[in-house]
Length: 358
Ligand code: NAD
Image (cartoon, rainbow, N blue to C red; front, side):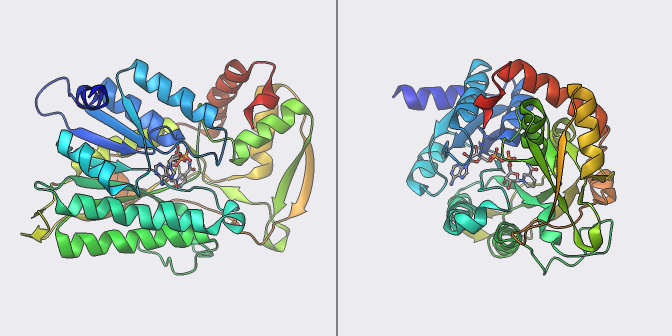
């Protein structure tokens, strides 16, 4: 079928020795950028995304259309569909799975808790079950989150710090993913790497995230809600630029060891890794709004409100020395530069019609 031919074509690397990667959530913000980078260097890349409407589907379709123009196909499907996954693995021998599909966002969990269970837990297990049964098994690299540090107050956050106090259902599902991943690694010999991303931002970003909605507020001259944290402090975030995160993902693929199981039998111990991918330079939200004002050349209307008890944590701050050592990860983009890139994209993408975005 044409559908099958297009997947096989998309999975063709430019030469021998290149990995062949299944990217889940490829029409999402991070998935889009990593897929482009992998394709550009000659890897075989096939995407899958369910194009859900958590934020405007138009933006996901536009990312997928760009990917297709570069030769990367995004299959319109859900990771809970094991039959579909099995068909894809039958067509292509993927060496790696970069699993980024998830229900993201901490506040939406109050409205739609089961979406998190469906995509982040059930979907992940479906994917792992399929990977476990293959011969050879692919190596798995997946997106965890800085939110697993929850209400931990010891900064900066290191990978072995406590992660037993999640502040949202989202965080709890990501922590559960790490534990589920560890189980599949231990029992079935899957090689697994968990990447704890810290507030990733940049062009083609997510309309539900603060940097995006703040930009829109400033353009539309509507008030920005800035959360006051405990003790009257402002929230701070370790904003990490997308290009730096992409490098971390690519390096994780390149350093991933092969899985050691086959067809549901483990034949040796397999690699299990967890890395922080942050920027190491947390910025207070107010200071972050200052930078946006400068780039947009307009004043923000600031409305200070108490932090709602719906899942946000007061601060995040990554220690990335583990990723530096093992992955050669080195975040180099400061917030001023990165937000400049975002604002340039936002203006060209939405033009005068900023209302169209969200
Ligand atoms: P995103 O929402 O833009 O991308 C996720 C994509 O997955 C979406 O396109 C969505 O349609 C797809 N998806 C969701 N459920 C699916 C399902 N059941 N089947 C198939 N596709 C499904 O988010 P993002 O910012 O690109 O995040 C990528 C990953 O990184 C996610 O796992 C997220 O939890 C994690 N993460 C992101 C950040 C960040 O700041 N962006 C921070 C920490 C962790």
